[in-house]
Amino acid sequence: MSTVGTGRRFPQGFVWGAATAAFQIEGASTEDGRGRSIWDTLCERPGAILDGSDGTVACDHYHRWPADLDLLRSLGLSAYRFSISWPRIKPQGNGVIEERGLEFYDRLVDGMLERGIEPYATLYHWDLPQALEDKGGWTNRDTAYRFAEYAAVVQHRLGDRVRKWATMNEPWCSAFLGYASGEHAPGITDPVAAVTASHHLLLAHGLAAEVLHGGRRPAEVGIVPNLYRVTPQTGTERDVEAARRMDGMQNRWFLDPVLKGEYPADVVADLAHITDLSFVKDGDLGTISARLDWLGVNYYSSWIVRGLDAPRVPGPGERPTPWVGTDDVEIVPNGEQTTHMGWDIEPSGLTDTLVRLSQDYQPLPIYITENGSAWDDVLEDGAVHDHPRIDYLEQHVAAIHDAIDRGVDVRGYFAWSLLDNFEWAFGYTRRFGLVHVDYGTQERVVKASGRHYAAIAAENGLA
Image 1 (cartoon, rainbow, N blue to C red):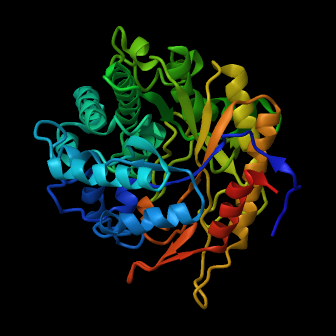
Image 2: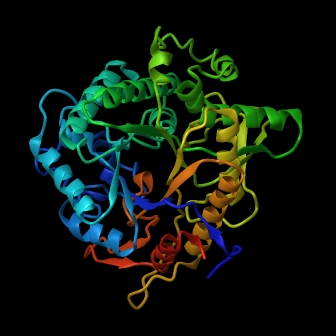
Image 3: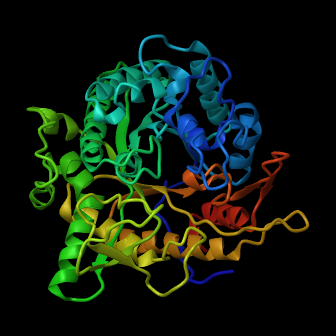
């Protein structure tokens, strides 16, 4: 099934891979000395997870990793983006190192290399040790230094085999979904805490980048923001202003300090009535903008926004907006098809986002570190015919090719996700995988989209 033109070949050496995250797939939440994470705690809060589930078992990847790597290899993929569980390495976030956690990732990395799969390791995919959250979590500047210590431990152990490192995955989500809207762990609704957390997450990135670059082994370091194209619904001043503010909080608040060494002045002004940014210390922005070897881009959708006449006040049971200072901005559906997450499908937004990065920021190799779609998949007669996911996949691969044609240095693509998994606040009610997982039996079945993606990788593009 194809919805785009044929003959789009990618540059030689383009990386085709898939991505996962530790808390979403590993399970084994109390085994081998693993400490509690903020997500273990949030899952125990009534009503926090849509289906009342948790990550205790998830996809049982902790025990089934050899078979999962075999699946990855069977799809012909040459790279695997995985995350390392901080509480599995340092159960209290600092202090004692859990050797059994390191041994697990030793086995996992060795298993990748034995199968000809290059490891791309992410140090933080949202599973902060609960012991650190008890001390303030990402609102506490000290957490950034504890993260750098953890990064040093992991690199010392795995750096002889892992070259590609991402420090942070989607720091926007950790800060603003975790501390502003409360949808994600730790489930706090405090706009000042959210902005403070965003800075400390970026500081942690910079400190970890220094550690990784300063180690005895070569390291290529990146960070992975989630980016969106933001456009006004109309050309009115109100809608244009709404788009500026949303773009500022979602995209530029994270890109500018990392790639330009400064927070965007207009967003600082937007936040002046909320915080004076006194938590930003001398030298922080120099640390945050330390040398970067590559940039990851997580892209799922784009936004059309409009300004409202007055700030929206959340009703009973509604969460506050995660975009601090944008209470009078509304996201407007594009009127086209949406995924099971309710997200608009906008492949051109990926092209525009990549072109913008190459034009507005320093040139860097870019990897699409996550891109995928959730659908209400049904397993029938041992197969999943997920044609909407195939369409989504093809359209976005074509969009990346369009960006490369326009001069953007895109080096690879990681489909989200290898496996159906625990989808955070949605529990197990949303499926993103190329591989279907029966959570009762843990049986894996490659979906039609998985086979189609394997063909794209084999052809190095849309044949």
